[in-house]
Length: 636
Image (cartoon, rainbow, N blue to C red; front, side, top):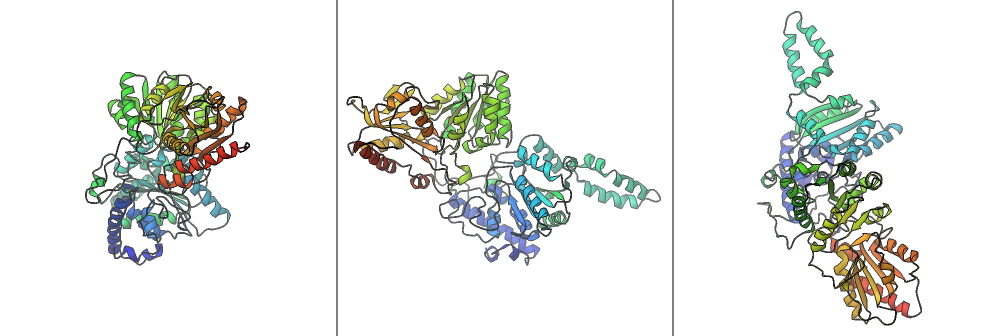
């Protein structure tokens, strides 16, 4: 690592020779494999952008020039070249973020790790430079071919092309993949560009050949050059970009340092919007990644660097695989069941369904809005779509859920993976918003299963609904043990009975547990019992709408406590409080949930402790509430 350790900032790259740049690239790949294998992280994408990132920082002068990364999971090399070479605590509390982070460096401009947004940022920054007369400031947006399947990218391109005199460099990092192979018309177009002889090469050959032709050679060349646009479309169909008004350079070998620098310098000096199309290989230089057909080691846990195999085998089944298995079972029973995902076939567990029912599986690319509307169309056509996405990504399709699915009473099931606190990927990946924003959707039903058995059961219940949207949401990681019900009140499972009623009071505390928080609530109830405080614990199963039996049950307790892994504002607790008020039930309610903050990356357990969503913390606060209530009444 002799060269890498000498790089403290981008300008340290300027004095390196071509040979040294090659060595540096090899050192960076070795560093990434060694360090990321210890912590886990996005390995494959970063192995693919080593030469590209070096070239970007040699041609452009960050932070004066703004270098922006879409999503940002491919920014590890950028971090190394901007003075951040301690990866020992990558994605760990107090260590480096797995994405760009303004708190870490002035070289990091944006840190929203949702895809397809970078061109919008770049458009705004380029306009700001122009309005302020900052003619010596460049804006460079790096976007993957997967992110180009998102509609926002094309909305931005439409606006970027409006001003031909506004400098902006768009670097398309084309590895043919997002997580898995990129699909759709855009992917096909880029594939055509990758495999077609380029216009510039042809024109250079034609000029040499024709100018050697006596008398008419020069005239023919000039005629062909005048017909440049049509000839370009015939030889290399990059005309789509140029039809938008964008200069196109490429395709460029994304692992040829000199070719990259040459292309980026031309783009920088053009004076208008330019696309530089770079062909890269995800996982390059690491055999285990290159041979992984599923996702080229897009994201890995802790692995053996030599083999790429996990250091620890998973203990128990995870939520995603439970969903995946049940989808296959449902698919065999129901020919009308179809699956939709937004470029995340493997991460959300739909790969087994796609393997068995390929004609009933639709990967729409990074296009959650389209996924929701297409699902509405499928439902209108007589099928039942299941749309599986990460919980945080459903935010992007809220209007479509509201106005296209719910308004038209379409039977569409949305399955939200990684709901609640996810931890190590930081603020934009925590699935803490869905149960708040979906509360306002008329007719929508929302299930939060507590264990694997309930996930299977509630998924089956959801797909039976054909006149309204349904949502099933669950956590990240391993499913805990099954939590049996000891009774049923209305549609709610009773997980702990408060004991014999004393007069009108069934127990001191009613815990309303949401989803995977059931175990925490049962533990808190045990801790309270040790203090002589009795508790009933119920799981509503379907948290929207509020079960009609809940207000009457709440009236039989001194305090109501709701516990959810969702934002407190507008969440399940707030909705239950409103239901109690509407029913005239005047029982104090305390809602426990995630504070409306952008939470820094850390482990899930660390974050849950930080925000007070642990059994001891909840029991301590509830005990104080009960004591105050006994002492003469409280207002919560």
